[in-house]
Length: 201
Image (cartoon, rainbow, N blue to C red; front, top):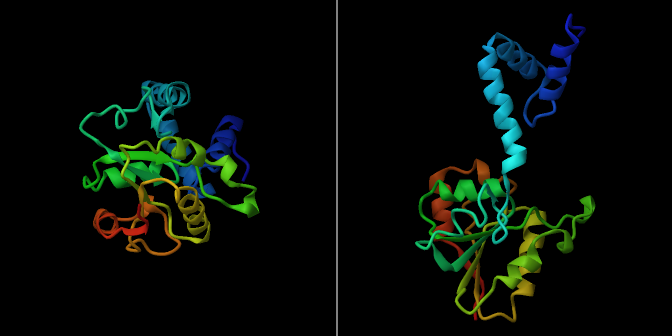
C-alpha cells in the first residue's frame, strides 16, 4: 500500500519488524501514535533510547539491569546456595512472578542449537560453572522443555558431574514445546516444587 507520507510508511515498516506485529497491527499503532501529543511521543522516544543506553547485563548472573550487580544478586535476603539456570532474561521475570523462588539466577543467553550455529561456547555455561562454589548446594535447570533445551540440560548435567552440587530440573508441568514466559503462575510454581534430581552429590 502506498501512503501519502514517507515517514508514516517508514514507521509502519519498522513497527512490522517487532515480534507478533503484522502489517495491519503496525498500521493501527502508527495511526495511534500519530494522534498522540508530541510530549507523549518524546517520552516514548526517550524511554527507547534509555533502553539501549542504560540497560546492561549483570556481571554475575547476566540478567538485564541498570545497576551492576543486579538487584537480585545484591539482595542479601536471597538464598545464594541455589542457582536457577534459565535461557533468557524474560524467563527470570516469569519465575519471579510466582513469588515462590528465593534463590539466585544464571541467564545462559540461549540454548544449544547446532542448526543455528549455537554451540556451548556461545552460551554462558563456563560462567555458570565458575559460580559453583562450596556454598552452592543446588542448580535448578529451568530451561524450556524442547529438543534444544534437553540437549542443553544434558550438556550442563555432564559438566557439573564432578562438582558436589545437586542438579535438578523443573518438573514437566510446562507443556512440551512452550516457553516459560507464557506459562501461568500456578504451572510455574508446581514445576518448581516438583523439580527432579538429575545429579546428586
